[in-house]
Picture 1 (cartoon, rainbow, N blue to C red):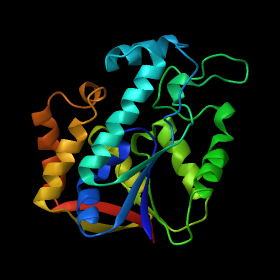
Picture 2: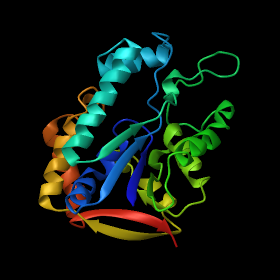
Picture 3: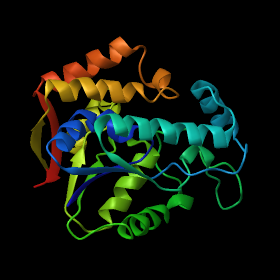
Picture 4: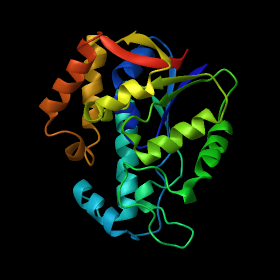
Length: 241
């Protein structure tokens, strides 16, 4: 049996549950992180919005960036002992609509109607790799990042029992959304050891291209993760009651 975390992007699952993943692997569990939106876009075709994002990440070449981000993810997962699977769907910053125009100039908005078919495609791609006894963990989509929303819709189309983890750092940035998204759910707290907490922070630091857009410093990151962990000596996971 595998525990499979479905990650919208190359960092989301490690940010949200890295400490528990480490402890699960130490306990002998088979843990995998499947990232959906990490495909290679057409070479160096960037919208003005994507150019701004690439500048923040420090790599302008599209192939080089995706390769670097996949390598970061593999390194981070290796710190925790998890395996990775990288799917080929394009991040929203690279997608075009049916007319060939750039679809998005923001990420915290509802998905465009031209992406209505994406959840079914995501579900099909995931389903093709699943075993009957696999356990799935999906993000709540806090903050309504459109790619997180699409992934959650896709995973829910599978019709399988799901556990939901809490999107970090969006929980810190959009705390009001947490109560809304979990109103009809039941919480299950998972304890995380201090070793797991430490390795969680180490794994987050592996995402060097992303780190500056997520936290001001390594110290701030570790403090926020520690504060989140210290509320329960672990983290909460959610299921529909």
